[in-house]
Image (cartoon, rainbow, N blue to C red):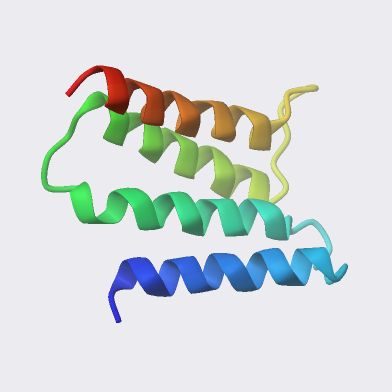
Length: 96
């Protein structure tokens, strides 16, 4: 079993716990699941840096900040992380 598979299992567990209503004070389980999931995508490609990899790393950082409860004014960090992740996917399709 690879590290990518383990991270995806961790993401699944975090999503299931969030879905059944389990919570820890300021910790956002959905953001933890998203951080683990995006990490599973780029951890194997860290040998070469490209714009999609950099955007995925930024998305991971934003998800971690959202997971620990950090807020910046009225900006939804999960939305920012998802936008970065989708942007990385779209740039990966257009620029190779």
